[in-house]
Image (cartoon, rainbow, N blue to C red; front, side, top):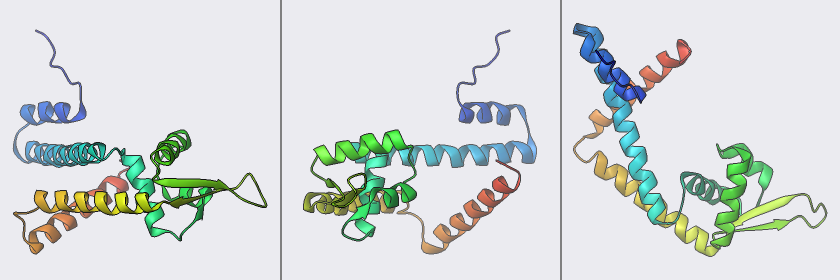
Length: 167
């Protein structure tokens, strides 16, 4: 008899849920549904960003720069954006080639790099933020405010418990 394939964590959880019964199976299925929902939302958001010529990291950089003063040191952006330095460097280069950001060296210290959004970058950021917000509204259109708050409370409790046990 051939062993079942488990090429992803969700598939493995589905397999385990099918082998279990009762409360344990229900819990595995619940986690599976949370993971599937999260993956689907992230795939869709990445697809929407790609249509606008952005990666997730590119969007993160633009959103961070939009919230910061007019011009910021690269070191300040690095502290905010959650991306490995080589990926961030590549992202900044692509955003600069797309005329969405400008990089300039410090006048006194040429090693210091300062960044700012261009007018096109501000416009793109506003456009993409609007698209992301619209997507989220569409995803949750059938849920009232109490349902959304309840979902948030449950997800926060799951996150807290996962951290507490080292996951």
